[in-house]
Image (cartoon, rainbow, N blue to C red; front, side, top):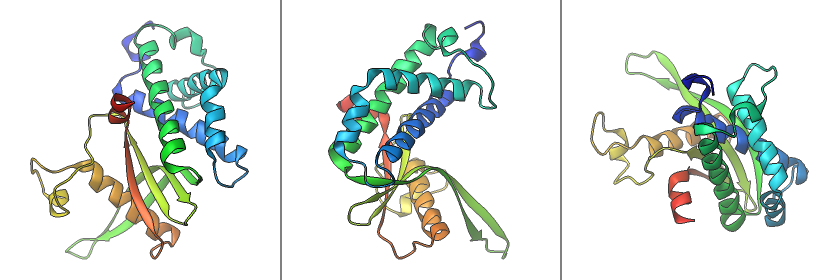
Length: 212
């Protein structure tokens, strides 16, 4: 790259992974024809080196030029820090696919990169809206929904108690479980699924990669 700004920073790596995962799971949804994704479908993706390479290039172009236009991935993706980022993100992507194949299949992808919002009434009666973008929402064969959040940082999903999630400035405050539960609650209300079985889930990619 000609400048530091052309290299993938930590935040951009996260966006890179989310974009790549969205491309792959959109593809899997099409293969499944809106039905349940099977292990064999994920194996086909994992074994298709050329497809994965194309996904990495497409996701890179989307992240580096989100407003469209022409970006030649070969100009910057396969050199320097960008190459390291590509290798890292591809490994994360493969870890997600392997986990879903071994632990989750069969499942149906209901939403990808879904924006959720939920009204919250303050003590003074004013209303604010809280929410964000859910990385993926699945439905299992038994009807249970999964609200999935990908994390590429050194986050933790373990917390001592529900009260610890609401500590203000406390050392034990963990944002990831709180955020994921908030997103799950917002999606349930937004989709009219208040009485449905729903499980929030966090994919901590560094942990998954270290254990693979």
